[in-house]
Amino acid sequence: MVGGCQAISVNGERLTVLSSFRNVGTGILVNSRPVTPPYVFDVVGNPATLPANLLSSPVGGQWYALKDSLGFSFDVRQAANLTLPAAPPPRLRSARTIDLEDPDTRTQGESPS
Image 1: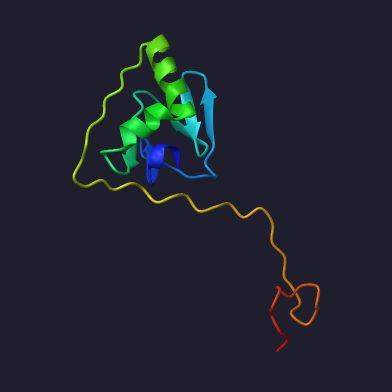
Image 2: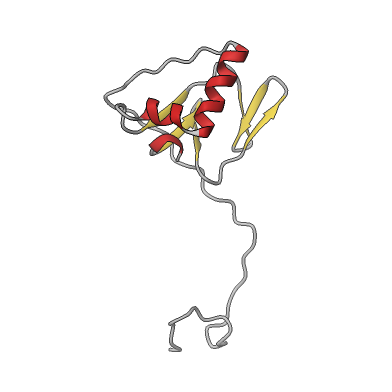
């Protein structure tokens, strides 16, 4: 994850490597759910290194430049405990049954019963 963070949520929507993040009108969609300002990012990670890691990353540098040019406020607050929502389950795109007797459908290293 960016800057060494272990988990991120935006206004209560958990972000993962499979999350979608789209700009739509005056708001954004996170995981296909509408999220509106003010945007609150909850981040789990080492509070001693996260801000510096974010600023030194290419994405972090772009964020700070965008924040400054658009007049966004950006505050960092540490919390002793932080609970983020669970990640949404991945959507099943396709599935099929397999015949375990068919050698083409067995996984590598699996032996027939």
